[in-house]
Image (tube, rainbow, N blue to C red):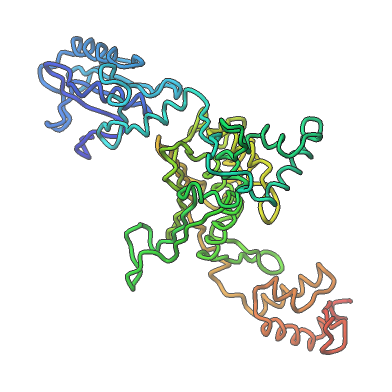
Length: 483
């Protein structure tokens, strides 16, 4: 603190020579609602973080403890008097309180006016939205179970619905096998009856299986933006702020698929040379991005206050950021992400529905087994990339993936000898191949592949299996190699 000249995110210093500062109670609230922190009394910030003259450690310790009683719930820090540079200071370690007890607030000001959070070296009052999100931790939210009053069952996609129902009957034949479609949809809260006994989709049912959910919730979508640099303020040489931008709509499986398409359109796929030819390696593993985007849509905040906020997928020159409204929920924290067995769903009905909601190209949106983050980590590790970087706040959660570095094999050119060896290795493994198969596997042009084949045929190490110009032409190892 002496070096930087100020307090820090996790440590607050006060002189407190004659009395406790009135703002100290706000710091107690802020540390309790965040990650905890340290309060040090008896140090003068204005004098370069040196011991404050005439500081009475015992009386200030008692005064600090009395401040803790002004909060709901009462804060119980570890408080010590410690020697420091020929003086005494008061050191208080304030723990983070359990999620089910948040927010910690100044009792006389009430929950919405007296709750604070630490930001930088100061304390900021929580917004009403943030307080509501903390209060949700006290019970299971049910915003995803809200009936959409102007929607009907005709607003559900028949293909998605059919696949969903078939999968449910396949998984649970004893429970759901003999039930009609409507009964299953009611049981799983895809639809509900309103006060007039009319059957209508729930928010969860519409987001997972709807034809066009944004007809009812225009901002429950995904925005994809490709920025030219590493910040949102950089521009291209001709003044453009974005390289690409798209608002992605539809039910969740379609939004996930279209987000991947947008990402692939704006990133490159490299080629790592392995064995015979190459292995395609994208800047960002498709499986990891699919998991991250589907998790963002499944776990985002669907409360009325958040329905005007979208999931953001932001592609920068050096990273990909995926951000959703609403922080982590329940027992899941940044420290427990990826730990087996630690799972909590803010949107329990939506999570359940998405388990059997199909993607257009096969598979299902989520497993809902607490393994999603581990899958992201594994995919990045397999691609030799850095681990994902999560950031959790009360109002949002973000996940950042750093762009894959170019490998040595990508930055170097393959020699003619390398290409010849690769062709011979592939023939040795597979017995015979076509020119088309070689072109696809190598990433080389058709002309380049044919030139190398003709050279190897002339050397009698490769021979054709069919007459010249035959559409069935394939190639195999020649007599010089013992074939």
